[in-house]
Length: 110
Ligand SMILES: [Zn+2]
Image: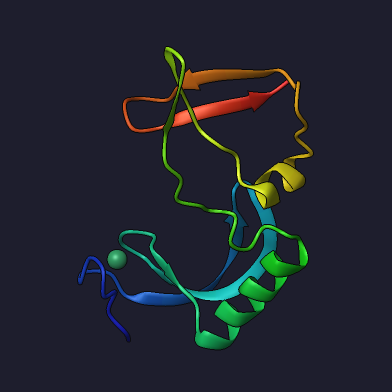
């Protein structure tokens, strides 16, 4: 039996996981799952299949590093074009903005 490399306590068992990216399901895949901590591991082929699916759905690479800029008395962020396209955002669209804890900012499309 293979031991879990994360917790080093549990044994890995064959199972199935649902892979998600940004809350969107990428499907179910075979994985080795730790009986102790629940961490799951997929092989390289599965990793490629997951990436392929994310590319197909147009959500691969949508995590971007951006910088805050000053705009009058406010601070502004620019939404990269591919994220705007994916979310169908346009100039003049209204959004709700709220903090989620102290390290995350949520933008809700209304
Ligand atoms: Zn574990």
